[in-house]
Image (cartoon, rainbow, N blue to C red; front, side, top):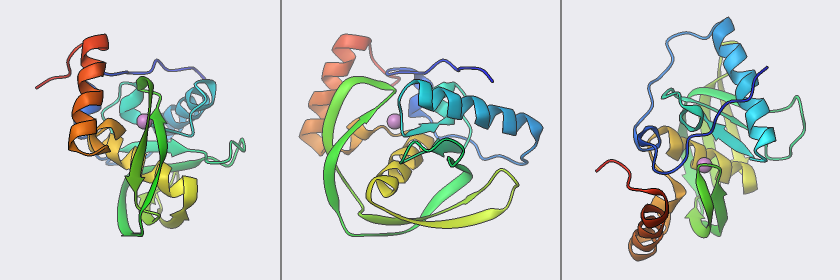
Length: 168
Ligand code: CO
């Protein structure tokens, strides 16, 4: 297993939609283990592939930090959503920034597991929030894009001043 290097704002890979997987094999299994190790090392509850430099549609998650029970989804989409909930959020790729984000309260996610089988998972609470945050990553969006127009603008401007500008 190996730790991977995090990509952070304003790395262009974070602003680009990721590409789906065509097959899942031994290479992907190693990648998933490395991503899980990196997620724990960085004290995250979720990690998308483009956060470790790979523009592919994959994320790992662990809402409760129980080792061995991480969730892994390839080519995932949110297929159902309901309710609204506003709670604080941060991101391993966005240093020192924590803001309240309105998300759906409950979501249903459909994605492929490590065996290449499609799975459907209903989530609420923190897991529902993680799913939405990670799917956003895979679509090239960060949580700072979800703060409402004025707050997003202000927060992104602050990040640009500090870390540089993302691609136009
Ligand atoms: Co994030």
